[in-house]
Structures are given as structure tokens and as C-alpha cells.
Image (cartoon, rainbow, N blue to C red; front, side, top):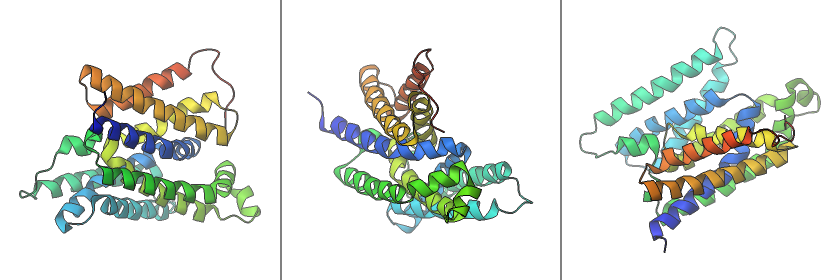
Length: 266
């Protein structure tokens, strides 16, 4: 018989996977892997601020990641700044400032490994409510801009000609991404969020024949990675967050087998 904490971990991981699937597809299509990594690194700074100001961690992570996302979008439009250099600078700066800030809080006991690699087995009922409530909200937001965002992803010029605003779509998307980072941080941690976003989507890319189908398959592969990773962690007593990512990696490698490819959904 499964323990309550294990069932909560399964439900939490599945909730994150369902949300991460469609967002991961856009990250793959728009080649924004490093962008997602930067937002996840900023999450640690959000944790430090939450502890210092005694506010909700998830809200603080969203605020910091969202502010950084808007800053990245605005600064990347300046031709004098390299996008890759800007992402690297902000990612490592946010991570370092967060770690330094936490080191000054001697009165607070912080499990850095849980922040970096997640602590899914410690998920509470309140966490589940925030995961599923927040997940529904961000998926609704993504559904609202789906067609315009996809058009801007395929061809910004064509999307603009059809009346869509590619810059506005990108801004809304990165803010939704910040919300996903805030929701997922406790599950897989700062360093593994991007992997959970990218790996199922990369595998689904070879197994799908269209964008909506790819988003659905990506979510299903993410759920399979969560279930497989958690059961492997239970059997072999390995860290839960990294085990989920290893399971996602194995699923991605399996998708590369000859004969499984359908077509590319991009």
C-alpha cells in the first residue's frame, strides 16, 4: 500500500508534467532553453527574498522570475547586447545573489539541496492546491494566446501582418513561464526545472504530427517520467527530483529509436 506522502508526490509531479508539456513545446520551437534556465536560476533569489520578507515563497519566485523575464525581453531588443551573453550574465548573477543572500540568514535553516534539486516527497495538500490551481490558470492563459503565439513563433512578420503583436505575445509567454517556474520549483528544484520542460517536449517532437498533438504527447511523456522516476526512487532509494529527470532522459532516448519517428511538429 502506498504512503500518503508518495501519493501526494505522484499527484504533484503529474500536475507539473501536465503544465510543463505545452510550455516545453514552445521552448523547443522558439529555441529558448537557456531562457528557461535563466528564469529557474532567478527562482533562488525569489526564495531568499521570501525568507527575508516572510512572504509566500511561490509568489516571491514568480515576482522575481517575472521581473527578470520582462527585463530580458526588453534588453534583448537592444542590438548592442548579445542575447546569449545577457542570459548568461543574468542567470548566474541571480543564482549567486540568491545564494549569498541565503548565507546571511543565519536564523533560517535552508535545505539548499532541496532548493536546487527539489523535494517532491515533502509536498503538502496546500502545495497540491497551488499546483493544480496555478496550473489551470497558466494553461488557460497559454490557451488564450496559443494560435497567435504559434503564428509568431513560425513567422513574426506574418503574425504581425495578420494583426497579432509578436512582442506582446512573447511578453505574455515569458510571464506565464515565470509562473510555471514558481509552481514547479518545489517539485524538481532550480537546476532541474528546465530539463523537465525540455526533455518530454524534445521526445514528443519526433512522435507527433502537429503542434497540438505534440503538446499532448509531451504532457503524457512528462507524466510517465514522473511516475517512473518516483517509483525508481522508491525502489533504489535515489533522490526523487534527479530520478524523474533521468527517467525523462531515458524516455527521450527511447524516442530516438528507429521507426518511432512520425514527423516534426514545427
